[in-house]
Image (spheres, rainbow, N blue to C red):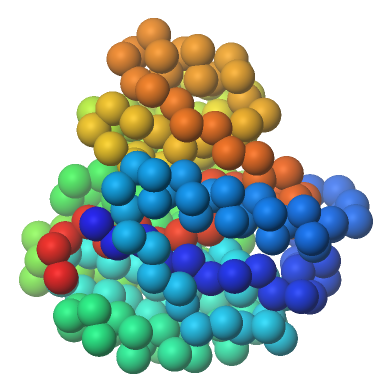
Length: 252
């Protein structure tokens, strides 16, 4: 198992803030938190691979937004914020070296990886913020031959679909009620907004933010072990644990 990560830019504090209140970012602390996040992945058995640095891109650390991987296909996205376009440089070459067939989302489409939630053969794509309908159409066309069902999900009040919902290993969607899109009538409600963001790092293990202890208790009751990491500096930029890595589950 490999996980792609990218070091925070020295300009991290200039990152885009859309829904959170703008607060100063402690860049030094952010580097420490990023290192701890990487260490948590590695401790769970993941081999981390650093994406080429993007020091001039304040939001470059949110590497999930520039690459969507499904099966043996890696899709280089077209970020919805024009200032983030440069973050895709070097991504295609890295994905190819890792053995993936590389595809691209082309303008006028926009697609952020944070809007793509994969649950088995179902691929939900949030539309309403950074991703548009043409982005969904192109992704659907790319993944059609792989048997994926790509479904458009209107979102509001959140930056990305995975700012609102993610999924447990058993496929259950989880979300904090005020933010869950209407498309998801059946989901597990979590008591904290950050509790909706989990990274599955093993069959029974979940990586999640350190500031949602009640959600961790809920997951424990369902048989899952939570591995908390402090991502407070990234949360100031509408970030969460999911967007700091791209997890590659197939054997390369």
